[in-house]
Image (cartoon, rainbow, N blue to C red; front, side):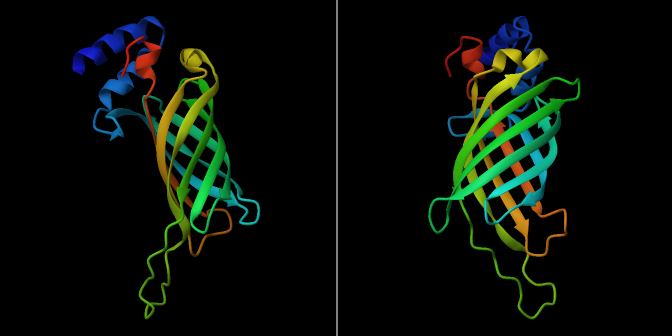
Length: 190
C-alpha cells in the first residue's frame, strides 16, 4: 500500500497535484469503506435553515490535503419519517487562493435526540440532526485542483441543530471527504 502511495505521489506531482498527493499520504489515519484515505475534513457552522423549504447555508473551514475556508448552500428534502436527501453546492478556497466548487448529493436519517434531565433548567440539547453519506463531485476548479474537475469523492457527515439556537448560529456540521478516485487520477486502480 505504501508503494502505491509513493507511486501515486510521484505521478500526481508530475500533474501539478503534489499537495493533493501529500495530503492523501499524510492522513492515512482516517479511513472509510474500502480503506479510502481521508482527503479533507470540513467543520462548518450553520448560519441559516428554513424548516419549510429545507434550504440553508453553512460556512467554516477545511483541513487535510486542502486547507482553507468553505461556504455551502444546501437543501434537505424529507424522504420518509426519518429519512432525508441532501443536495448542496460547496465552495472551498485554499490558503493559496485556489478554489473548488463541488456538488454534494447524499442521504441520511434524522436521529431521535437524547432527552436531557427534565429536572434541569438547561433543557434539551439537540433539536434536529443526524448522519449522512454522499458524494462530492468537483464541478469547477482552479490552479492545482483544475485536473480534478469531474472527479467524485465519497463523504460522510453529521449535522446538529441546537434546541436553543441563537439568531444567527443554528448548529454545526462535521464532514469527511475521502480520496476514492485519486488512484484513478494517477492511473492506479484502487
